Image (cartoon, rainbow, N blue to C red):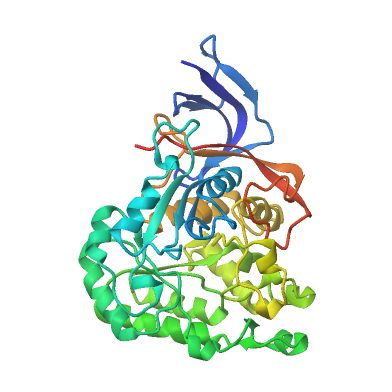
Length: 427
């Protein structure tokens, strides 16, 4: 048995509310011991000086996009998993808008037959979970065989796109209630959105870009909440991006409605002021908020009004993104960048604690998926990330594991990098 001692590492664990220096002994895929000082070690123990490094539970992404199947030039399963591991993620939930979509049993079976699902892969790769589509072709018109998909083991149900048919939403919540699976909804009124590509406001006028009004989100949030109040089925609200959306969610939670909600990591770091460069990599859906939206999102994510931070990793090729801002497909990569940029912007500035950040990108996303969070405790599997907050590196095509490089931080120096990710073997 080969053991590894992480000596004087900073242990950050939201489950036990731990943030302290300790020695951590790892062997055979499990945490064997944690103490302020461990000295009774076997002869084959490898000792690593981890002063200045952070050991924490692996990160969990609520929803992201895969290129494969259908768009392998954007991302393959293996490049997605490599990017996830490089960014400290041990669990990633994939939205069903692949080609073909994950809206039937055969499609789900095909992705599960890929080699990365084998228990023989060493070292173990991050775990992929699959959202099943709740409408055929993720087109929002006809319900899928949700009971069959649930029995086949989808993590939950989401189209990853707005569902405008409220009668269909009501029926879905009625059918899905006894299945006990998470349900994730995108609140957006497409008619109110129109052709908007950035959040409506002073900046959209100044930059001459079509505005997407905040009521496109808040009207849809209000409608979903009314349906949830009538049916009682728990739902997760994805991609919250406006101050008014936060207010409606806060009010709904105060009234006891069974909802959780998340925002994307980029909406916490950037706002419409950053669009002055017309960088197509900042063309997102929903669009970046105005400064007051960003402030409300930061407060809501810190205090738990918004339960989780999602990555919403959306790879696109150079050719797809190198177009005018209004013509660019919305989305950016993020699995390898989210942790260092969030840490640098929120924790190092003192706005958030390390525990608050890890709560939002590890513990609560796991709970939203209906799973047990990873923890750092004796006899627990090594689902861990070792992070160096001071290491600098340049995010370019040579260092990024993702096949795509559609990020506004391309070719920029990043402070903070994952040293190692431990993923437990698939059981």
